[in-house]
Figure 1: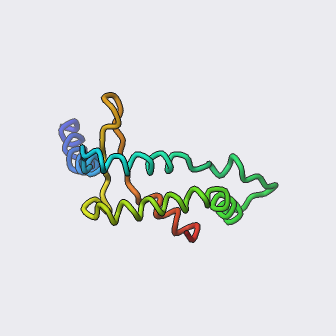
Figure 2: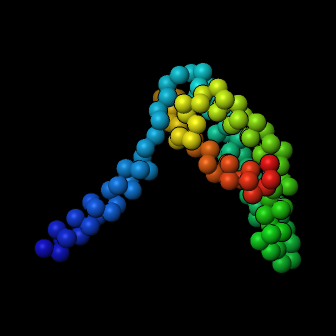
Figure 3: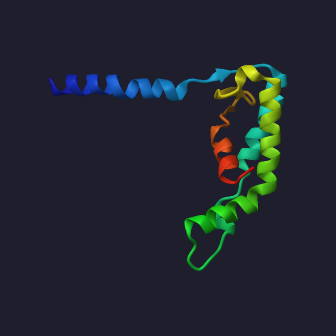
Length: 123
C-alpha cells in the first residue's frame, strides 16, 4: 500500500515538473540555428565571478559589480544578438529553443537567464 501511495505522489507532483522541464520548441531551420548557435556559445563564454574577482573580503555587491564589469563587453554583444533574434523570429521569443547541432549533439537555448544578467548589470 505504501508503494502505491508513493507512486501516486510521484506521479502527481514530479511528473508535471519533469514534463515542464522537457517542453521545448524544436527547430530544424538552418537559418534559425545559425542565429541561435553563436548566442549559445556567447552564453557559455561568460566568466565565472570567483575566477577573476579577487578581494580580501568580497561582499555580494562587490562580486556582482566585478562580474558585470568583467563580462560587460560580452553581455553587450549577447544582448545585441538576442534582440536581433527576437525581432527576426518573434514566434520563438520567450521560448526554450532546441536544435541538433550535429548528429551527436543537441542544444537548448533559453534567454531568460541572459536577460536576468542584463537587468542585474544594467545592460
